[in-house]
Amino acid sequence: MRKPSFNSHSGGKEQALFGLVDHDGRPSWKVGEFGQIASEFAKLKTMGFPRYRNPEVAIAYSFQTN
Image 1 (cartoon, rainbow, N blue to C red):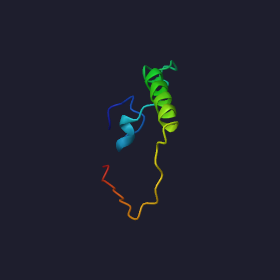
Image 2: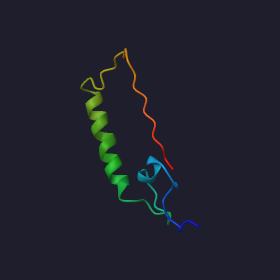
Image 3: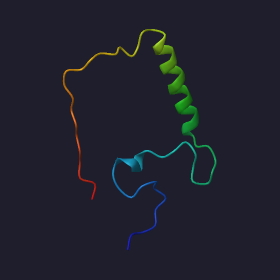
């Protein structure tokens, strides 16, 4: 039997992607950080970023999660 965990998912990369609200319902420390990231992306958008291109290749990667 697995030991109980507070991780959002039991396997895969999702374990590292917790939400902006902690398990107790309070906003986490990440709310401010994501707000800063959003404002920086908004600023970059006024400078012509991202530069959209039509890629000629694509890479797909999958990994075993169990």
